Length: 252
Ligand SMILES: Cc1cc2nc3c(=O)[nH]c(=O)nc-3n(C[C@H](O)[C@H](O)[C@H](O)COP(=O)(O)O)c2cc1C
Image 1 (cartoon, rainbow, N blue to C red):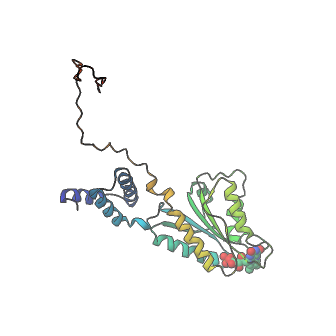
Image 2: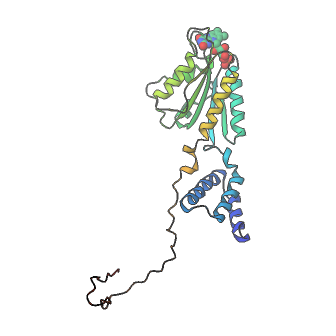
Image 3: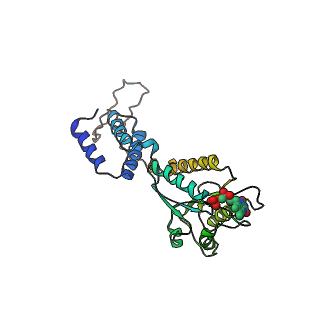
């Protein structure tokens, strides 16, 4: 248990910190403990911080965009469900229809998830056409984008989930990084889509992006209990008896 002054200091620190700072601090303390060996005070602080931020469920990122392209509403409904799930996990999920999506924002996105159906003969929904054309520009650069695409379709059509395939391909071609592979769903999509989004949420909480990646701080070597003295050798006298083969050794 911590003495009151220390506990108060830590409680003040926690109260004045943002969620991200607390998540970082939790990882930082884990690094200290790992390099020092478990000690009771640090453990107590770690527990307090972990409780304050519910560490196991804490996502490594906190803002994503979920954009949908729909004709009859299926993709919109799914995207809405995903956004609600993300929000429950503490992620700020922006939900937007592709017809309203500001195309200039795409290059600024970090985490972008598209839910899009296929219509006509392998076409995107009419509402997603502008977005679809935008990502087909050869000059598009999306270097900071991490993304995932969920495609809705129907296997009875020859070009199954073609619009989703195209979106996934174009985002990758423009430099975006796939967080997970394209998921293509047939008409009974609910369960499969739900699992896909669970995987998305797991990816977003993955340790690679979590604060434990913060470098462990340098910790001073622990004292061994031995005392060290410095001095100058004034005389070197052999105390062994005459005839002894032993020679004195001097350690400085
Ligand atoms: C007129 C029409 C054309 C379609 N064309 C395709 C197609 O080419 N490929 C495909 O995989 N699905 C096709 N579908 C199936 C839809 O993609 C599927 O029903 C999807 O769930 C619709 O989602 P939405 O409500 O979000 O638009 C088509 C559906 C309709 C009504």
